[in-house]
Length: 418
Image 1: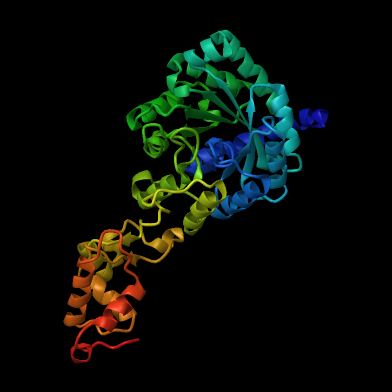
Image 2 (image 1 turned 30 degrees about the horizontal axis):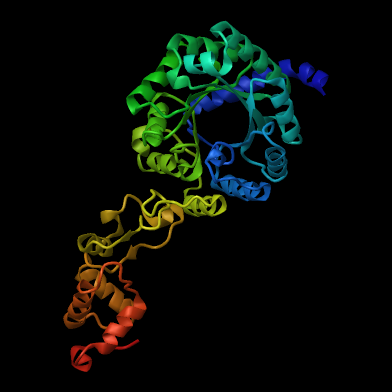
């Protein structure tokens, strides 16, 4: 098989470059999901192969461009999960993570066997910062560059799609980072990634970092550029958007932002920031937005990692309000107090929660939905009952029915029982 690949490689190179240049000219932002690899590294978020397949199918339905399927050399379970996914995933590009080791590339080649060449790839990584070189690898700059060259060349013999990322790029010297990228491109890399591995960047620094790569790596126009941001300062989404503004083509994210330590950039948050601010970014994004809410729910369920109640895009309370002024506005027009409507992301209907902060409008709305006349007397009666509830008390339709059944002189106030 290797001899056949070597024979057709010179033929494929121009086609490969044509595809890369087409992506670059289009300006399209490509969403790459790493939930099943980087996300799963979050303590307690381990997934079984069948669960990974289910999430992968949901990601495919959402329309993501590429899927970081796992680290096949790390365990038999990861290898089996990738094999399982490769049997059913058709549209996204599936990639496997590899160290700069030939055995890792061989494992990825076997795990992704059967997929068309343009639908499978590898992502190679090696630590490049002084901390990683001196303490983890115990390698010099020259030795690291040699490893990059050798491993990318080897991977290019087996894969048409080869991504290279310098681990801890944000703490790597700028001049050496340029050398690492140029070495990888000359060896055959088709994508270069910029990982903020420990999440130290700010949006301004993220923008400057990607501009530096685009302006100083001599062969950068031959490849696509990806950003991979971690959330240790709560800035992963902002840094991802800054990287895209600087000119990156691919953003790597996880659903619900799960991942090591504080997690990764949340795919759904990046997606909706781009959706709402289309005029600002002016770049097309291909995604089925209405699948985002159920996708987030699925990942939370399968990983056992709960979302915060107010989690953007998919939290339980983001389409709910108790504030009377907001409730009144929403009843008059949904867009008064929403950045986007629930149906855009496949979310639940707007919920007007009854509580101490509620006003007359929400109470009248609930009374009418339960079959009562929303007279001033009825509304004020329920509102007074609500104000007297202890903190944490549940106010639902059962409670409203109970209150209305106890209301004195109800026949004279126009109340009608459903």
